Image (cartoon, rainbow, N blue to C red; front, side):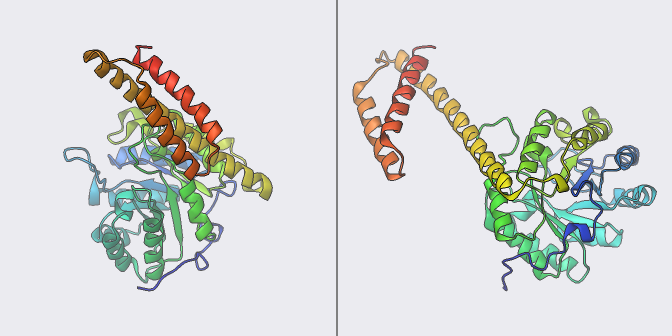
Length: 360
């Protein structure tokens, strides 16, 4: 199969979509629950004057059976009606080729591939075949796993099918790490994507990264600091009553308040300031990772302390400490770290671990 390695043929956003302060704002309910719910949410979004595209979950792939999975084909005519009323282009997630076929048949304006779809090159290829030659715009979320090649591969497959209106969506990754966020942002991956495909628009989905409405503003701030070109935000006219992902959905009014204070693209930082912001953002991400690792390590220390107590073993074991320090200092040296610094850090870590094992 041929390879596409740059975004040279991708159509810039401003040439085919209305933008707000130079940003693409995609918003709408996680899932279409009823015609009334869709209409109420869409009308409030249209009234903000900020939204470029109405997103709506028609088919909802769920991790486990028995949960609400959207209204399916029944809701497609509702989308057509609300589009005619509000003038908002409509975007729908597709997970299978027949989903794409149904979208084409019902005049859906855009489709997007979810994280569970992007991770499957076979399904991506099947969907690409359906839209080949149609000029259907495609938004592509990162795969659930942190694999840049899979993300680029999905984009390339769509380009090889003739798609030129393509947008990448950063929605975070499942890594197994304990975090306040639902999905690990791993900001370095979308940054790397932009470096490899500089013409590709990359927007952020703060709803899926945060997983909780409380954290959405700070995720948006980080995305803007990295110069992302827009946002996909899950909104619901009554989030507390939502049938899917109620915690991460916000009202259109809340979304409007968040976006009102964003700087426009004309006020964007100069090149040096932007580079610093990008690097500092990555430092913040690594610091958060360090804190999460420390929290996990001390949880293990408490468990070690409980086992020692049960078996009458001493908390301080000099032999174990010596072996640990030798091993860690050797690894640190191999990584190019200052061993004096690492030794001081290990001593602090050991002292705190001893305190935690003793019941601190």
